[in-house]
Length: 218
Image (cartoon, rainbow, N blue to C red; front, side, top):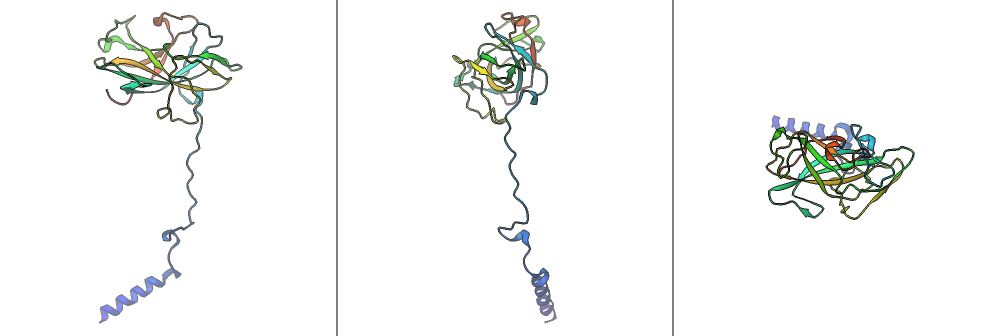
């Protein structure tokens, strides 16, 4: 009987303590303000590390500064599958006019770029080394787009095969390029190389900018 009386007294004390239920445990409680999602921010060229290089092809009046901003492995790019025994090294690039006071017109990144690494890692695949480097050609490439956020991996890219894009003064556009690489090739540190006014066709003379090591597998 003593135990029963003590238990009843404790239950009564707990139910009356604080005058009622706590706000944190009540459905619909407004004790804490809702947490807002981070706002989307369009990517800007200056947001990405490094200086980049200036890309200029024949016929362009104004070059565009170019940086490689991301990289991964994929079995196909822009609905184009890689050959058996190969994967695409997919590189996303950011571009902006090289001159701050004007835009650039008729810009295409399709069939223009190369990635390279030092040939000390092993064979280059079907191609022979040039000046100690293995080079891989950039095709297919996408159109350039102005993105509203950093979701370039999820973006639906369109082929840039027959497209050229104008870039407004101070604007940053993003694009995607695939570089087909044999699965037997062991890559070293990668660089993105682009034609410029001083070297339009000889890829061994192209200026280059670093590419991050790709994630994913092949």
